[in-house]
Image (cartoon, rainbow, N blue to C red; front, side):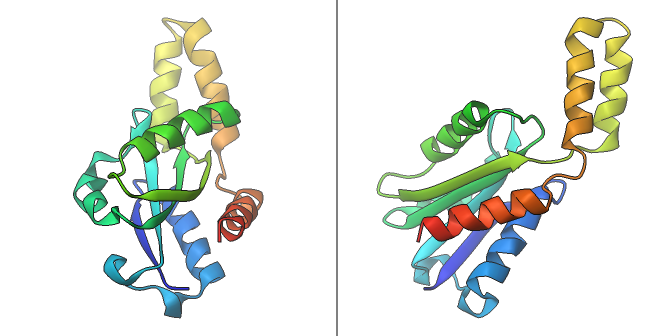
Length: 157
């Protein structure tokens, strides 16, 4: 099966998933979107949705089978991941058919933690949980995340 990957990865987390897809599906079967049987669309989470930089690439997905994937700094809840993926799906053109999806936590840049620490001095109740989440996100996506992503991808085929 031929496939294409459209991916936006601000910190490299989502690109790790895209690379795992290439390994699982075979790099020789990657092709341009127009020729692909399946298009994998991956994005980091920007304000709860897909990176707006992908907007120009999305119209070519009309009539295509699409597998959505991504990473987000906040995690720990499949319900949260599902809401983010629902927003990703809503950005697709009419006629695009979502055949699978996957989201996991991704680590954030150290500057984010530094900002949370400074802000926690003024509002500890709000920012201490954000610091804890930041620390939990370190190292993600990890091997278990990558394995779960591959399993979800294979299940969609």
